Amino acid sequence: MTPYIHDIGGAPVIVGAGLAGLMTALHLAPQPVVLLSRTPLGTEASTTLAQGGLAASLGEDDGTEFHLADTLAAGDGLCNEQVARRVVEAVPEAIHHLIRLGAPFDRALDGKLQLGLEAAHSRRRIVHAAGDATGHELFRALLAVARRTRSITIMEGVTALHLVVSGGSIVGLLAVLNGSVFALPTRRVVLASGGIGGLFRDTTNPLSSFGHGLALAACAGAELADLEFVQFHPTALDTLRRPMPLVSEAVRGEGAVLVDERGHRFLTGVPGAELAARDVVARAICDQLAEGHRVFLDARQCLGQKFAKRFPAIDAACKHAGIDPALEPIPVRPAAHYHMGGVAVDAEGRSSVSGLWACGEVACTGLHGANRLASNSLAEAVATSAWVAASVAGTCAGWQWPRLPAVVPLRPDPSPIRQLVSNALGIVRNGNALRDALVTLLPIAVGDTAAADPALVALLIAIAALRREESRGSHCRSDFLGRAAAALPSRLTLSTAFENAVALSWQASERGR
Image (cartoon, rainbow, N blue to C red; front, side):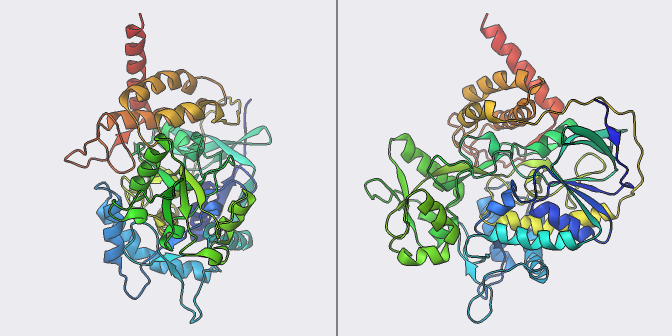
């Protein structure tokens, strides 16, 4: 089917309408911008599920140096220190900007912002809203402002299908609405499409979050970075509900402890115990589950009857599952939660393809390294969106349009590969399982089914995981448990990934003869 051209006057297009997309659009005002959302706004955005809050050094005993040190320690040697410093220095002012936009952050009786504590933070610095509904409250406030901003055109129910590149530069994108394909000519596209958690069986992300932006960027020729680093949140509510409700790290910050079915606290010998880095806690829980134990988060002593007031959303999710956190421990297990890797970008959010930027979880800025520090994700989005918007605004708005390709739209569906991805790319990986997964994923990724794009993203992650022959941060290889002496970031393009996957597939077929 041949798409029709929808002339937007060369305005920039933002793919994704979570926190990163909304903030970028608002920073661009009063310049016109088109904001695309695959679903009705807020229905499938990871932002609305974020509980903990934003990390910012606002406390009297805190400072940017402390926040920076905690960020670098969690990142396990792979953070870009220059980027990390710039972000942690910018977040306090970004918080005040959000307040001016109407963000209803929780305050103490004296009017000061309440600050929570989360794992691997040396100070209380988590700014939150409605107790444990920070993402939802932020999204609600920002969406209200965006809807009042005349320069922002919001297109709901629109899926970006393909970035059109000519002469090495973006010249537009193809999208679909209600089965009709159309083209948006533009030299400026910002990817703000979120993460990859929907590739996994156990996830806290919307099930549709399969790495849509990564597939778009990869097919446009963009360089990708650190794709192997997938963060598993240690404490998702262990029920059949998907996506899994998150039991925020802030619960452990208030003193809740992790125990097995006998009440044994198994993290007492680990530095930091329940407040160790996420990869450490997730692996410890994974080990308990592998040994046949169940794992629970016990908040009865530290919070008890105060649980519902401090964490109303978590309390509601638990009670929906028949659990009263004030009276009984909460069953938990790790779940895919956040992707540290993404589109490789510079300090202004520019990718390696001219005219393409990335912001939020889909981008790899270097802030998170091998393991994101809790509540640095929303902080990164609000800080970097301003820099991305400034870069986009300073770029030429002219456009041209090449011959349009024929497109048959398919709604991507990651469900056929979820079990495979969960088995091969989970908390602990090994080379044999990764190679087997690649052989299976390759024909799906180059096929014409609804699983093609999800399989493509999974293939890219598996190649990156296979190439990193060490255990670092959230990437754990059972066949390479040691940590390499040098911390080296990984870079990958689609063409390189396909070359590697084809070679591995050929080797597998030769062995099978």
